[in-house]
Length: 408
Image (cartoon, rainbow, N blue to C red; front, side, top):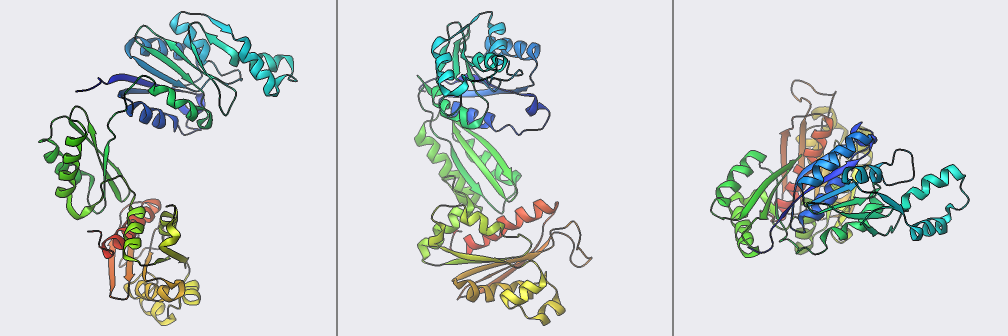
C-alpha cells in the first residue's frame, strides 16, 4: 500500500564516540528523519577514526542498503578521514572544488599557517559524481554520492552543522504516516506491552514498540501497511484498553497534560519539594506557556527551611520526621498560601544512598496533594538508586496532579 519502505543504515564516525567520551545523539535524529520519509533503519554503527575499519564498513553497507548516512569526520583535522574512506570504499577519486576553496577562503581561513590551511581546504575535496550539500552553520559541506545500491550521504558531525542538512534525506520520498505515541504512567512496561499486543493483533499493517523510562511508558504504533485511518483506530483501541494509565494519545508529556488540564479547569498549580529538589517544577516549567497555570515552587530541603519557609511546625518534624504523612500534609497545605495556588503538591522522601531506617528505608516517599476540596496523601517505596528514586517520584507526583484534575 503506497510507497515501499527502503532499508537504510546510519554510521557515526569518531573515536570520541566509541571510547565513551562523547554521547552520540546524531543517530537518533538521522534515524527519525529517515523513518519519517519511508526508510526502515535496520543497522546503526559507530566507528572510530580508523581508516581501514571505516573503509570496510562503508564498503559493506553501501553494497547492502539503498540509503547509507554517515555523520562525522568531515572537518579540517588530521583524524577527519570520512571522505578518504568513502572514496576508497567506492573505488573512486576526489577532486578539490574551486568554489568550495573560495568559500572557505572567504570565511577567514586565508591567514592560516600553510600546513593548517592545507588541512582546512581538504573540506573542499568532493568525491567524483557527488552532489555537494552546502554548509549552513559550519565550514564542512555534506555530500551525496551514488552507490551501486542507492546513495551514500556524508554529513558533518557537530549537531548544529548536521541538522540543517537532514532535509536532504527526504528528497524524492513520500512522507510516512506519523507514528501514534501513547504515553502511560502507573503501569509497567510488560503490562502495557501485553495489553497493546492483544489489540494490535486485530489491526493488520500496524506495528508496535514499547519504550520505557523511569515513571513513563510509551506505546508506539507505526503504519507498516495499514494507512492512517486504521492506525488511528488501533491507537484509540489500545488507549481504551490501557485505560486510566494512558494519559496522552498525541505524544504529549505528562507535565504538558497536567498543565492542559489545569488550564481547562481554571486552576493554578504549585509545588513544595524536598527529595525531588525542584524536578517537578522543572518539568512543568519546561512546557511553553506554563506560567498561565503554574504559580511557582519552593524547595525546602532541610528541616529548618521547612519550618522557616513553609511553616511546618517543629513539633511535627520532631514527632513524625521529615519523611512522613504529617510533614507532607503540612507542606502541601501551607504551600497553597505561600505560593498562592489552588492545587499544591508536596513531596518528601529518602532518595539515598544514606538516610534510610528499618521503618523508613531508602526509597520511601510521601506525597500530599492539597486543594480547596480535599487533601490526598500517598506513600510509596521506590526501588533503585538516588537518581531513579527522584525521577520516579517526579513522575508519580505529576500523575497525582493529573488524576486530581480529572485526567483519568
